[in-house]
Length: 399
Image 1 (tube, rainbow, N blue to C red):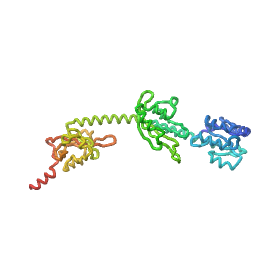
Image 2 (image 1 turned 120 degrees about the vertical axis):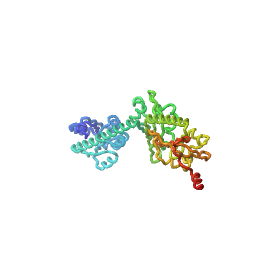
Image 3 (image 1 turned 90 degrees about the vertical axis):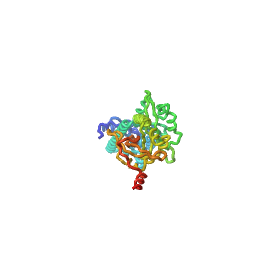
Image 4 (image 1 turned 135 degrees about the vertical axis):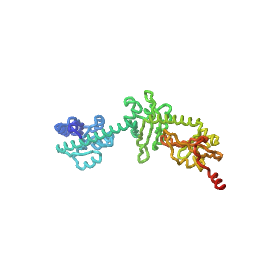
């Protein structure tokens, strides 16, 4: 809710080449309680004044020498974001009202003035303007808060004007302040890690085709020497002729994720090394496709190297009579109770079956589930998986 005191404190600019009209409007607004009223009789100064003071309302005459109200509004559109002009036009020609509204004016009053009507329209326009500003402020605050929590900054480059804009989070991610670093591609590259500079320069080269979406990761180095990892996404908006209007993008700090990935990768590498040196035979498969076998597995199955098994189906190494073993319930690797052993038969690389004692467990890893099969030479007391088909045929023949 906008308070009346806020409306009366709003900045108002009166633009009319007739000093008497200016004096009349100033007196009327002051008597109504408005405390921040300015005026000019030179329309050529309006844009510079608005750029400096950002008025909440401009009372604009249309018929003026040197520069009419329509030309003033065209200049104001370059200043106001979205072209939403805080303009209340003043005209003595009713036929210009529609044209003025199409040109961007929000409302109009007719000459000679009806003072009551002017005050009502001023009040209404200022209330709408201030409500819009409050909404924009709240949305901007929500966006900034969301970006801060997500460690996600955004930027935009205007090809026509050559200007760049960075969000607050961009500065926080780079570890720089607005007073020390103006937003631009060149200043961003100052923060890129030297070892990644050539790669990032190639990805951000504006001479390359900008219409394609670019999604890449690299490192930055803050002024204090701290290294951070970021994910950078950039995409351009083109006009009707396929020419770039502006390019925008996001930069997200993914340092914690990358450090976790490195730690996980190192942990997995240690795990693989342990399996490789284990005296037991180990096989790892994902969705039935073998991704890892160790040296003991190669020795057990007569393979010269792991490459002879990696990429093949796990069914290729297990005798058809033992395939039911894979359908048994599997324990999780983290379970306290160790998995039970089953007597099954492997098929060596040369096709000869060999009996083994095996267990099968699930390994839950980020983004995937691996199955680890561990086997060793038979031990006493482990139930056999049963005779093979050929053995059963021999039994039937003897009977």
